[in-house]
Length: 425
Image (tube, rainbow, N blue to C red; front, side, top):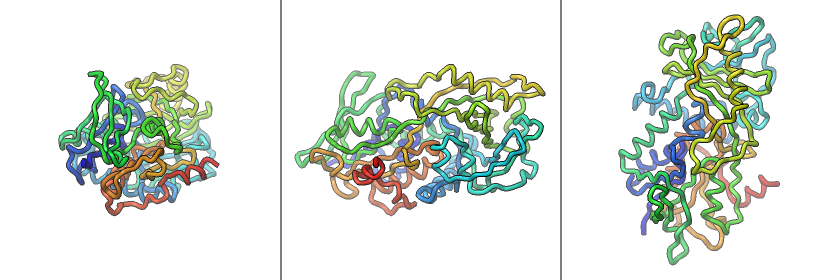
């Protein structure tokens, strides 16, 4: 019997899992299936790429630390600074008045409350020690606070990181099926998962992939994929989506390599009621985002890159002009390089699902081979921390699939029918 593994979803979680799993098993027995005609066309390609070591709630702290260190190690080993813009980052909370931040929350709360990611920072340091970014427009009475210890935050260009990971996987022999979508699970005479039927868009043909282990890393579409493949299951995978508009800008005041204070992550608030985030990247770009919505409809996964909403982009552009513009009147001397809309997978309780799904939750007597020989797994719901948590998730999920000791405690991230009832109540 085959022990091939199929990974559904070629976003940052899927390609990270394939990358680390290919170190444990024959890479040619790993299949990655992605329906979008454009790779990394949602959160994996349009996220900010902010990395933190200790900004997380207790159930995520071990995974967060593991992932942060792996980002650093991988960058050192493979030239991440040059290949995907890995760089340490100084984090600043900025308000355009003398008022200071008077509340601190933990990891998942800021997202649910619609406040700033800076509220997840573990500590506030009083002095910037001359590390103020030159590209941020200052106004009379504004206030800045350093909110990261040295060596505990960094950033990457997530699109470039995703491309690197996928390229390495394919070089090793991992098989990419793209664009293609899953149709149905195939079972053997014992009722165990033994294959997966997929539709390959370009040829309009269906094919069957051998599959004893199935890993669903389909981001905001994870629940729909699970329901499609296990229609008789009563288990609902409660992954929702948080839509986010973003822009990549060029400013005459940001020149990577010439700025003596290096890369920055700036978190602030805006009078339009949202919390802008800005990251100055290597390569001379500034990523600007923070305008989020949980009400925008989730597009079909096979539709490709989502079209941004013009009203939201106009609001984001105006905020960028006010915060980053030069001169007393904030003249618009910013060049827009790219605009985008992505859908980040979230759960209502604020932490992701990284779990093997019990056979009894698959429905209608469906089963999998026991132990490391088979299984259905889900990894999704990382919200705004998908890039930060990606490498750690790939490591522990690959270990989970292989039945190995996990490198981080993720016991609080498991999910089954019993937990589903608790979360639903």
